[in-house]
View 1 (cartoon, rainbow, N blue to C red):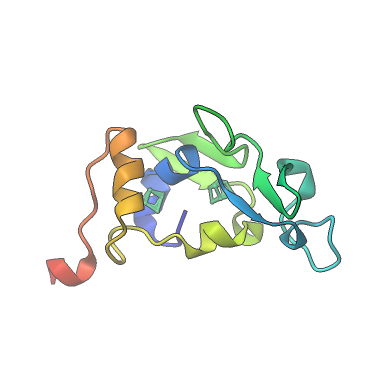
View 2 (view 1 turned 135 degrees about the horizontal axis):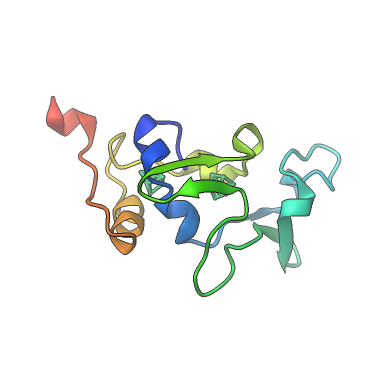
Amino acid sequence: MSTVSACLTCGACCATYRVSFYWGEATGAPAGFVPSELTENFHPHLLCMQGTNQASPRCVALEGTIGKQVGCSIYSNRPSPCREFVAGDEAANPFCDKARAKHGLPPLIPVKEVA
Ligand code: SF4
Ligand code: SF4
């Protein structure tokens, strides 16, 4: 989930992809910030957000109803993949489009194309 407002009525990416990241980002590591209790082991050097490594993913930190109103309960401490994922109205992102389509939502139009 990106920082732009479109995400607040979406949340599709948080319920589509496995969100994995280096274990050092979690609080079990000295400089970690992602709450370890919301993560699970995925690979010797990687963790993932609980709920995202399953057939029908939904991150345990995602609150609300997809396509209506959502929030990330650990927004300021979310892992790097969530920070780097760009919403489709910020810049073209086929992965945003794909996640939204999976949840019955139309693709977003990058702001630059609207102007
Ligand atoms: S799928 Fe795109 S618009 Fe929806 S929450 Fe993720 S980044 Fe935001
Ligand atoms: S940590 Fe937050 S932004 Fe990242 S997938 Fe989970 S709910 Fe979405």
